[in-house]
Image (cartoon, rainbow, N blue to C red; front, side, top):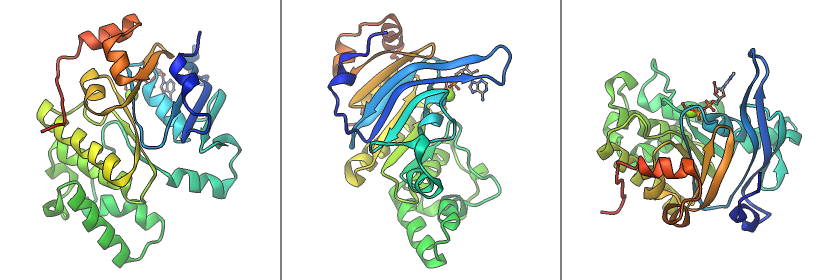
Length: 266
Ligand SMILES: Nc1ncnc2c1ncn2[C@@H]1O[C@H](COP(=O)(O)OP(=O)(O)OP(=O)(O)O)[C@@H](O)[C@H]1O
Ligand SMILES: [Mg+2]
């Protein structure tokens, strides 16, 4: 399959470079090819959208990107370093650069909002004073200062998502990986969460990779998009170009499905 032109044009020294990634789950019978020969470049400061239908391979890509899955073949490079070749210390440092917002929040239900956000910091053995200061800062950022002692079961979906975003930012990562951050939210709450992500990108300089099945999400905040269909990237480019001149049938289908108009401008 031809590599889309935009991918060739983007800088060699990208923040994230995925090269010819294939992931086959062999432990199931028959084996499942979740990704086949997938390549992308994400530049520092991008909000990069990865869009595709259910089962296309989006979460698998994200899990390979943050080293929770090992590629069957191909490479994931972070600032030019092949993540498969990192030693233990380097791996921890590389993982520290990434905050992850998992599909379905993954909050610790027995812990308060404060303790959920504090969790990555406690793993780093930060002091109580450092933790409390950072958690307060993050609660303010996501607009949940009044929910510090609440438990996840007492929060709405949008509030849970904000806690998940705050937790992912706790260790000041360079990259925020978000797997379907708005798929369970109504259009009003979706808009608010996307606005928050955009603000994080613009004010904190965090590069964002966002996985979604909604073109409205891509249109609202992504400067670049890659369309994944049945384990392959079928189209990628600047969001504006892809929206104005979609080349692939899946892209057209996803665009036709753009029932939400989720602008983040006031
Ligand atoms: N751990 C696993 N073991 C076996 N197969 C898996 C595993 N994880 C994912 N798969 C398979 O890989 C394919 C891609 O799954 P993935 O979760 O990446 O899709 P997705 O695009 O994120 O879908 P959704 O939009 O529904 O979240 C699917 O066929 C899935 O069944
Ligand atoms: Mg998924």
